[in-house]
Image (cartoon, rainbow, N blue to C red):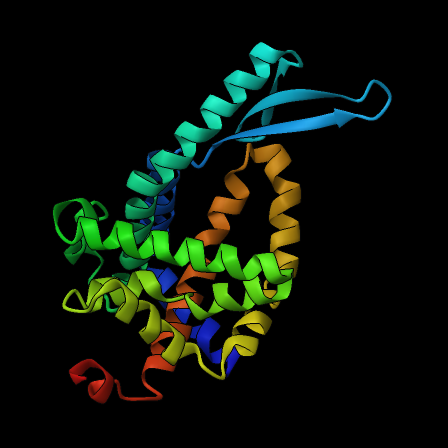
Length: 240
C-alpha cells in the first residue's frame, strides 16, 4: 500500500468536493446525535460519582445523586438504541457519499438512502459487527482492534452488494482486509499529527476542527478500499 499515493488521490477528490463532503460530515454528526454524550467521573476524595451531559466540547454537571444517575442511564440507553436504529444507517449514508465522491458521482447518492432501501439488512449487519468486535474485545484489547479493522469496509460493501446476507458482507470485508490490517493501522497513524492539531483547535472551534479533517481522512480510507478491492476478485465467493 502506497500511503502517499492514496492521500494524493484523496486530495484530488477534495479539490472538487471538499466543502460538499464537509457538509455531509456536519449533517451526519447532527443526524446521528454525535455531538451528544454522557459521562460519569469519580471523586476519589468523596468516592462519589458526578454525572455529566456533553454537547460538543461543553460539559454540563447533572449532579451526583440517584436522580442524576437514573437520568444518565436513561439518556445512555436512548442514545444507544438511537445509534442502532438511526445512527448506523446515517453513517452508512455518509460513508457511501464519500465513496461516490471518489467516483466523481457525489450527486448520485443520497445520504438517507439506507432508510429507503436495505434498512433491515444495514441494521442487522451493523449489530453483528458491533457484537463481534465487542466479544473479541473481551479477550483483550488487541483482538478487538483487529476485528474492527477486519470489518472496516462493511458500509461500502452493504451498498455495493445488497444481494449478500449480513454474514456474507462481514465475511467479504474480512476477505478484503486479510493481510492488510497492519497497513490500515499504519495509514491511520500517519494522520496522528493532523489529529493532534485538530484536537487542539477543537477548543477554539467548538469541535469543528475534527469535522473539518474528516473529508481528508475518510477520502483516503475510500482510496484504501478501492486499492484493496482491485487486488482481488470476489466472483467465486459471491457465486458460492
